[in-house]
Length: 283
Image (cartoon, rainbow, N blue to C red):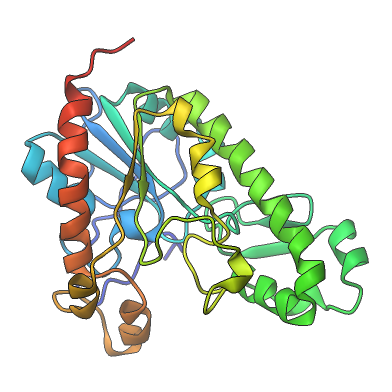
């Protein structure tokens, strides 16, 4: 079984592909020869463990086809070099782009898997030179690798953070240029969007999306129609995994994700913005 196909704990994701893209997306497969709204993002957009994730909720509410291009553990790199998906988003009435972490992209310090961007492939010679006391062969996942570097030396690690942030903004601008201006950026995270220094957070390496600041998102505002913040309420977070589908072995992973109530709240945040965006004339 290919790694893009997700074990749903009894939930069927009906994995499908579009055109020449090598990515498996959540199905059922939607037609792209009629009006649709595209959703681009990571695990939250995909809706792992959730029967009716955000795109499906909005499809019902808007009575408009919504194509889920979410990818489990996907980042900007998953999409920006995929001509099929970039073209599909360009042709959409509106594209909702979830803000994804800066750790999920290849840069001058390390490389990630082209589709599963949480997978660490290799460190560059520059990274190895700066961190000559680290054995990079021990790492499979980027967050584990970055967490170890942070524990070794927070001061030295800040160089990596700056590289990731600069790379993220540049890659996002590239992606938004390909899609066009009919984009709504979505901040869908239990952490609020702000400019708080990353190292001052309670668990700095566990926040999502990692290393993204309000200033970075503001730099993209001129290229999009709107930016929507969908930080779940305390009530939604307390609902936890109620209504989610997962096996006993997946319980911990499910508990760390945004649940059904969070997706319903995000739907309400996006609904009026998308209604307005759909009425805006194409330029």
